[in-house]
Length: 278
Image (cartoon, rainbow, N blue to C red):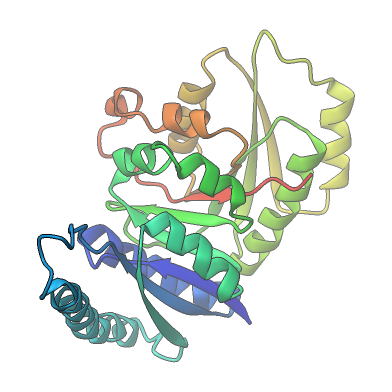
């Protein structure tokens, strides 16, 4: 059975992401591991010689009480969606969110991570920061990120961006497998810029290799790669975008507020980020 890690801070974005996590678990016949990470405040114990541990214990207790109170609400959501049969376990961990995501992936043998974010800005923040890039490089499982405005709907069309490299083909095979589970079609996009040199024979070879699969290939000539991807999402009515996590800076640029501003509230598509396999 697949194991899906769902980090939550019990915010609106996280609760919305939980619905997607439930449905994803149902799709892949998996179970959920709910993670709530918190960081204890830093105190200088020379100023708290007697009640130093009491302070820490009280913070931990308050976090535990909140965690205990919120879990029944999530179970209620599962029951309402008739997904109460999905197994859920829980982890309350001290430390940074990204550190504990990575730790849980290893200790709990996680296959996927599903998490809610605050839309475009949430992705920008997630892929920035001093340690985030390093942590992401160490994560070897796909991450499904859910913008807060992305209300759950059945996945019918999955977008996949490619540069027709061998590593892309491995990722596309995973996407096809997921698409078949969902009964969805895959629309594969290659943005051909003035500097790219993918040969027509390579594209034709891919089309032949995937001829029996529910895939359409699209080659669009443009030097505005990010804008073209966003246009593609809207025009082809993509329900979930999948791509390789090969460049952190690419994600930062793709989900930068200045770029997504022109799409207003229309950009609410879940992103399925697949780690590179060499």
